[in-house]
Image (tube, rainbow, N blue to C red):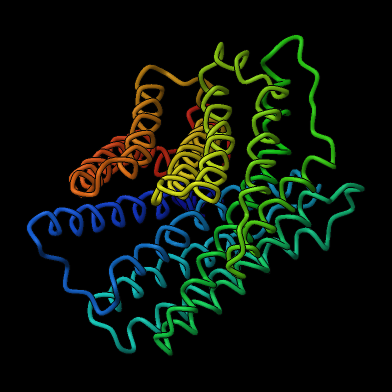
Length: 394
């Protein structure tokens, strides 16, 4: 029997490749929109560009990378067999197809947009359901991280429902509910849960001496703070007190997880430096809530500084390890990661500039991110199409 192409041989391959391609496509589209605005123009869209951008940055590629990670690491967490090939191929196929239809609908409107949202939602339900099957079949005595991730997926389903209401009715409140549910109830809890489980583990494997520190009260506090911020935002109530407490908590956690010591190992430092953005982001949210004047800087500290740079760090690590390559950040990868950090700083700083200066900085930051993702993709996209370097399966 002919052997399957390497692309079909492992969950991370089938999900990471379309995730990278869609991240590049979406950044290219947003760069084009920002460039057009410099000339007083805009792309001809059936939706307000900012609302389409908000949805696509939250749902456009992160769930694809989650699919690859959770269908690869999840079975190890839970001590169960990995999902079958049909499951790990169908889920990213639905997500990617739904997003492409969604993009077509954003341009022309009508049935394309609703069809894309429906197909994408089916793919998201496939991801949540596939992970739920792994969890429910697990004999592992400790499944708290997995339950936290699955609960966040449940809120993600609610966010997609709110987005569907927005698309059907045009009511902007649906978009606002989608934004807060997706950001504070889905994305951040998933990222925090994975960080709580994996950062001390990765650190203990390369730093010596190192005492892993991940008490359960810490995970509860981080998740509760994220959900609390989202609920206060939905209710329209101030959250600066909670945000200040979260900034202190995340700063203390970075210190306890030994951020400075991690700088000796570049691949590990990538994870720790990205996590450090959370303390800065919530400090900016506290400032914004108490004194104002920061525009979108707090949001972009979390969404660009934390989410995007952490995505690069985690996906790079998984891709290296599961392609049989050394777990090392070479000069090129380290340079790309540092470029992403500088671009995150530039995106946050752009919101602090006088209004007349912001548009140009927004465009430069978006173009820089597009170039960074293109170079990152050129490093890893071929990896998903080749056999492992060490000759092993997967």
